[in-house]
Each structure stands twice: as C-alpha cells, then as structure tokens.
Length: 308
Image 1 (spheres, rainbow, N blue to C red):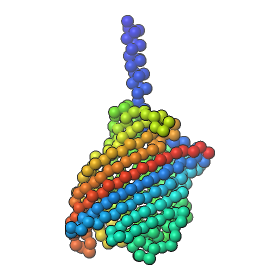
Image 2: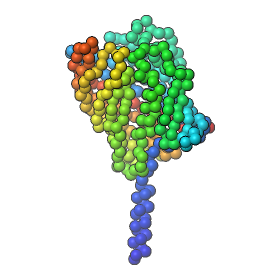
Image 3: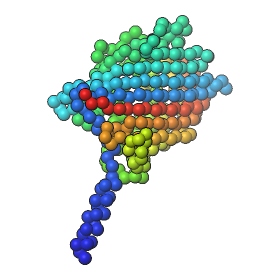
Image 4: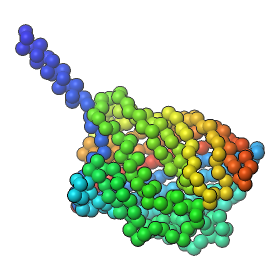
C-alpha cells in the first residue's frame, strides 16, 4: 500500500510539472540568426476642445530585421537592426494627409506641417542601429550605426534618440512570463507605450495563459492580454506648441491574443486592441484648454526566426 501511495504522489507531482509551460523570451542567438518582425499599428483619435472635434487617423506598417552578431565576453551578444519597410498613412486635423513609403519616399510635400512629418520618416527609414544585449536578452546599449539622425524638427528629437530603441527592446522582453505557468495563471506588467514627441502611456496589462492550441497548422501556446489601467505621461519637450498638462483617462475596453511558439521561443503572432477615454487639458502659450479624448489603438505583429 505504501508503495502504491508513493507512486500516486509521484505521478501527481509529475503531472503537475508537465502542466506547467515556459513562456520566456529565449530565441536562438547564434551568429547570423535573423529575427524578422512585421508590425501594423492603427490609431483612431478624437480630441474635443471647446466643442470642436479634432480627428486623427494613423495606419502604420513596418518590417524590422534584426541580425544576431558576435557574442560578448559577459555572456550576452550584439545585434544590428533596421527597417526593411516603413510605411505611414496619416489623416490630421484640418484635412491634412501624410503618406510615406520607404520604397518610394518621394519629395517633401508643400505644406510645412506635413513636410515636417514626412521628413522625419524619410530620415528614419534608412537608419541602422546596433545593440549590445545581456545574457537575459535585455538591451544594455543602443546606438545608430551612422551616428545621430540629423535634419529633422526638434519636435521629433525625443523619438530619434537611441534610448527609445533600448526602451522598446526591453519592453518586448519584459512582457514574457518569467516563471513556468499553468493554464489559467496570470502575470501583470506595468509597461511604457511610447506615443511620440515625449508622450507615453503607462499601461498596466494582465496576461493570462490559456493553453496549447493549433493555429495555422502549428501547435502554439495561447495567451490573452487586457489593459487594466492607463496613465498619460508627458516628458518636457519645448518644441511642442501644445502640452498636455492634465489628464484623467480610463480604459473603456481592451482585448488581445498572443501566440507563443515553443520551438522559436517567442511570440510569433499578436493582436491587441484597447480604447481609452477621459478628460484632458492642453496648455498653449500659458492658456489651459480643457477637452475630452477618445483614442482606440490596434496593434498586430508577426515574428519569425531564421537560422544562419
């Protein structure tokens, strides 16, 4: 009887261990490995100031290719990255439009406001950057290979700082589960979502492991995600004509699904949407203008790892 009970206990422990799954970020980092990521972002915003609705629509697409380079003495590695494709389609208040395609950037538009954005995209598209990574895949150092990007408006200097690349890279690693999880278990992360020009959302996101499922003929691990809270943060940017001085925003709705590939050891397919609404105050030339913000953000990505 004692032997039977021991077998039952051992079997139960083994079954429990098997139910746990590792969802950590750990792609191959052999020299010459390429990680290709396609990202599509769609933002729809209505800002109402003094009874006037100012609408903005943005549809952006980018393909980023990262190539793993040599290992470092500290156990990490180096990599280089750049845009394979960068596209933007923006509709701005006042009927202005910005369209950009890195494969055919074209000439700067006549309108100064539109030309400023077009110029920033044109300067960013060919940029290449190098990263020094730790053994835990966190970015230790980021820099543009050909030096700082020049010839753009001061409004965008914050966006073109290599620190933004470092922040985004570390955020991508930060969202993964650090310990093995079972179906139904959740983990929470407080993340920074860069909105541009020194503005960002601090988002509290809850991730929940659903379990293994088949998707497009592949056995993947399904994770759902929901934004629980949002806080708008604004860094000092003297070049901006208007500054958000106060805000009180709430998450109206949120949903998302992430698919983890246990062979490539990263999320290979993600689809997230959230909507925030609330009050906002703009300060222009010392004058406060109260208003309302209604913003919906949708983001999709697909990633793949190719061995050398």
